[in-house]
Length: 328
Ligand SMILES: O=C(O)CCC(=O)C(=O)O
Figure (cartoon, helix red, strand yellow):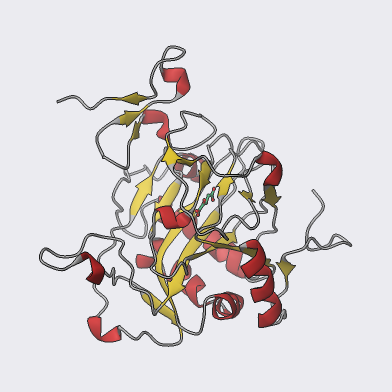
């Protein structure tokens, strides 16, 4: 791969921290994504990689879904077991610090607005051989009321087509439609469902290859996916993804307390990363529980109804349904 940072013709959409707010916003509004190169220094990336091992070894405390590993276990054996750590910013100082990165602040305040909050982080390990995530839009999962959701995907390893970089469909955020999702049954992807029936095809998609320390920012309505890591064994495509939105919008991410109307639902386990929060007086309760996610080798529960088991195509006879009905 030619490095986007060093290639003579720098691809469109790759910016340096000195880029102007206006050019960042113009590209993001039109295409739904942008890359901020050199947002994190090699030292900061090294700290985050070392922290990833500490987290996965359970040295930052027990996390739901983790199993104790003997000290003799190698780092590789520890990391290979896991696909993703959810909410690491809740207990890990270096991951929390990424929310306040200067280049990230510049992008967020340029494209979202002056007041920005973070509601989640995900640390993807993605060892060689591990699956990617099928086409989806992040607002399928994190619904804002003003379409302000934005992911900040920090590359901790150089991300290439071979090792499972992000792919995006530029401009697909514009219609503001959340496309229906269906179970894919495809081993290339993890247990999350796939967005379908949208008016784009594979030829509209582009890979977003980046150097470690770059951040890919993408709109919550942008169709994106990642493919499996097909790089040599013993290598990784690690990334830390933080999600942000405008402070002005409520976040109906969890059902409201009994007796509270849906229109008042507002998930408040958030951290203000820029400007001010007009709802600060509502408080900041501790709600999110950090957890570890493995890949679907041991089966996929349907996230929509939490009951039916989704099956991969190789788990059923040809033509048989990919969803196992719930047993009474
Ligand atoms: O890192 C990946 O492989 C997928 C990340 C992603 O799709 C997301 O953060 O929404």
